[in-house]
Amino acid sequence: MQMLWNWYTVDSCFISSTWRITSKGKFAGSCIGVVCLVIALEFLRRLQREYDAYLVKQHRMRNAQIHSSVHEKGSDTGHLMDIEANGMGKNDSNRVQVTSKSPAPGPAADLKSQRLVPTVFQQAIRALIHMLQFAVAYFIMLLAMYYNGYIIISIIIGAYLGAFIFSWEGIQITDATTQRDSTGCCG
Image (cartoon, rainbow, N blue to C red; front, side, top):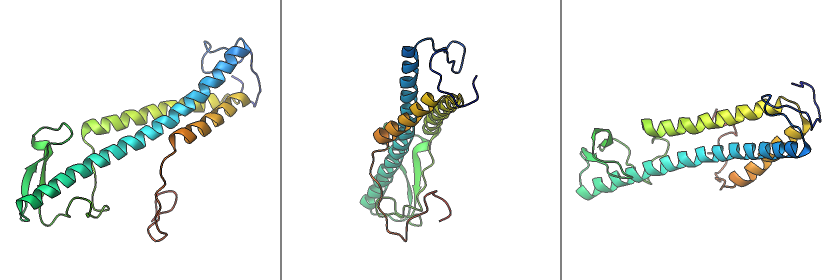
């Protein structure tokens, strides 16, 4: 393995002895493959955000159902209700205690007081997506450690294309008093 910056194309070797470049066509294919790999990483990052947003949407829908059911019964004293939404049947894990002391679930509720704890299955899916992200990112890092200029350029191009395709989403606009710093901490 060459640990110095290089521009070698033919007779380069990446990751294992079976990935040996014997022609310019194979090298071009490797560069295109690296671009696609980095795009796949950006896809996985978007998939994680979309899945988390889906879980939050599901949670809000269940809270809205609970909120409307409480108001329909005309009771603020508190009672147990069964939730049957999104394919979930009646069982003890779907029972929620709603009392007048808890914040009213629904659109008017304070979002900071609501917390979603994923089920074991939901967390397993989240962990699987994270594991795939980790594996792909590690593989890309190993490719970058070959210090081949063409491979590094391919990684950069893949990052640009992946971000262009999969980070094209709305940007939340908040006033300066409620905005946190860019790292998401300390505020």
